[in-house]
Structure formats: C-alpha cells, structure tokens
Length: 114
Length: 113
Image 1: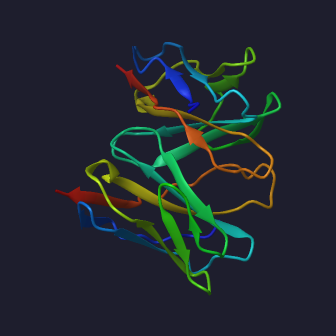
Image 2: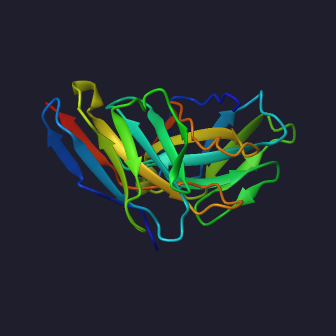
C-alpha cells in the first residue's frame, strides 16, 4: 500500500541553523500539508500546498518557514533560522484531491533544536 | 468548523468492542465527521468519515445520531495495536482552501490484555 515517507526521522540542529525536512507524498496525490506536534501537545496545522502554491497557512507559518515542491516527487519544509521552540515532530500529509478529503500522514521527523 | 468534545481517556478489554463517543452539537448541515488516530508518536492515521449515514470500513464503524449532534466510533474487536489517541474532527468541505485538520486533545484509548 502506498504511503507518505519522510526523511530524516530525527534531525538535531543548533539554534540559528537552517533545516530542510523532506517528504515524499503518495504519488498520485495533489494536495500536500505540513503539521507539527510539540511534545505532549496537539497536532497543529502549518501549511497546505496545491498547484505549486500555498493555499492556506497558519499563524505559526511565519517568514522563517517555506515550502517547496522542487520536483515531481518531493515536498520540503525549510526553516531558515531555527529556534528552540521549533523543536517538535513535523508531519507531512497528502491527499489525492477531487472529492476525496482524507489526508494521509507520514511517520514524522523529530526536530531537536539545541 | 464545529467544536467537538471527547472523553480524555477510555479503557477497553482486548477482544471487546471499543465505543468512542464524540459530541458535536453545533455541527452544521455541510460538515462531515472524521476520525483519525495517533499511535504513540506516529503520524495520525485516517480511520473513517461520514456525513449522516452510518459508515463501515475494514477498520471501524461510525454511527452518527439522527440529529447529527453526536457520533460513536466502534472498533469491533479491539486489539493491543488499537491503543492510541483517537481524534474526532468535524469539518466543512464546502470551501476550497479550508484544507486544514484541526486536532483537539482526543480520547486516549488503552486496550487492556
């Protein structure tokens, strides 16, 4: 069964460094998402992406964040200058589109900012 | 999207049916009820969704009351692998761009051997 994959599974970075989290959505899916979950807290929406542009973003998704679909398979989340409070699990999700609204999530990348 | 209320935790014996309730009294006519679960710290997993009719798939059944103000997710024969946090999410599908899933705190279901 096709699934969303994410790399790396764990990323440790120093405060102020740039990180890129990578996702490979399910191949025929057209809508892509990033969510994050700080340890012990709720899963929070960051951004949705369709047709090579952001369709919706949350207040969390400020100028330090960006998303890109650099080729036909990858979907990336970049954090330009990481802060301690960016430490969280980051989940990528995708959905096929049309009248199918279920989102399928990847296993997540645990980002630790020191 | 309408607000949902779920019990914070529940236990269920292995092999029995797990019935997880969700209250969504302010649901409007075009809003669907979705259920996801999160096992440990893995990514949320889609389970099932419905509008007003009861639904069943290979994972679970969803029972929605006639007035649509509440629903119950049923795992017919719970196994230890069903231990997870279960999220009931109500969302409208009428607005393109209203893509996000808004997760609450869910119900932590523990299956007891």
